[in-house]
Image 1: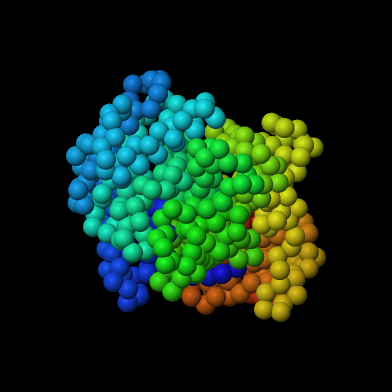
Image 2: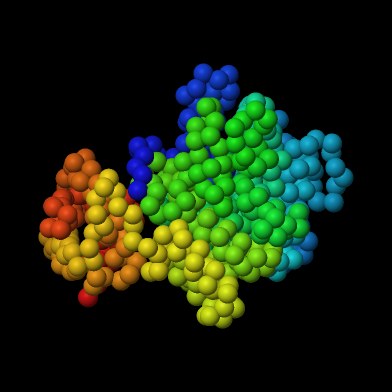
Length: 460
């Protein structure tokens, strides 16, 4: 488990904040563009969170067939939507960014219609809106709830964001997620939000190129980095943590298993960091199954996304269980497809069949017979709750999580930094086997740890 410092930063942007922050601290001439991009992104996210972003609905005739596209030009300003420069059925303009956005929207619409029978983002003919040439040297692209917004990059590290079809597919996929499962954009549900957007984005590209799983590069943003950059893209779904290693960008920090899970309040709970874990599970399942990834593995993920059983705060383990069940429902519980999905999750350390977490700092694994005493203080109502249990008595996924938590130094560090809050709950954890006895205020707990504690206290 890796930890990162606090830096609140939320929203559906393709370039993660940790990459831009690293670039902003360099002496490169484009560092100023990175700082300006961070400032714009943070301002936009604040405006969106407070309802002052001025977003308007993307209108379309309900149930209308065929794509409905409108591309606008911000002319390097920051006022949306900009001047309309191309609409549906209009000829190419000769402006590469305009025409790439238009064509990318068409490829994305075609993918959903032909593969999953979905009529646009909302399933009901929603107009696809985009704004190009946003800002000066803007090093990002984002979905604002109704439209895609594209920067032109800085011309030295990042090129045009319209040039990457998987980026377009990724950002529009956030719209699909909003209209289906509406996954909360924080912690593990937020990482799943990012991962599903990566999955759908890369499937849009693979479908357009006619690639099967074995022949695909499994990169997100492979068309963004300009020559001279030591990297192949923003993220590698098949090999998280290997997409780039460049003095200006730093090293790709994505973990590829739960052993590297990043505990942080930065990046809205590590949504761009930890999305590497479910990304790899999908890529492994798809390549094991073989053939076009959208045909089997993609259908399984899409079934879960649109099936109605996905809670807004779903964690990795719950999502894994749903995908395994969906694979069984579609292809049979004993099918090769179900086995591939199960093995993909097991390989990244998620699910009941995953191996116990690796020892940390030379510590031996925590034995399943170890007992843990969990107590929650009474809060305002003054009603405490507690439970004492052996790890072996807990559900498999919670047992594994507890083993990893007790083997790590996260709880002692949180306790050392935690301060009492008036009327807030505090959780006390005692485990004699690892000489642990700590108390942490609930507001200081990472979301996934708090939810683990709640499930443990609610158990038999």
